[in-house]
Image 1: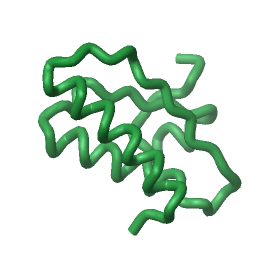
Image 2: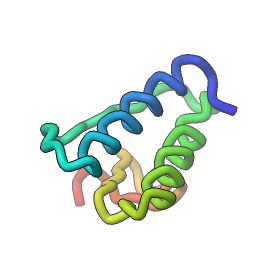
Image 3: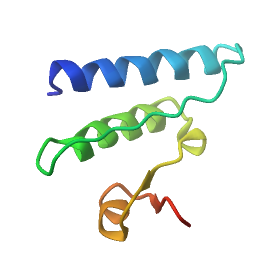
Length: 81
């Protein structure tokens, strides 16, 4: 279950994805999810990833993190690669 602020980030992403899949051409969405360790950032990213996969749009999602460890936890890349 996502917290209120986390759900807000998910809702923004879900609306943007729905617009894109409906044929609209919204500008690219770049979202930064930050916080201290243990604030469930990875859970939010996992939920977003599952939503992209469920809609058949996994290929539209790019994920990045500052460190290799963080990138591997979200199945993403480092920001410098």
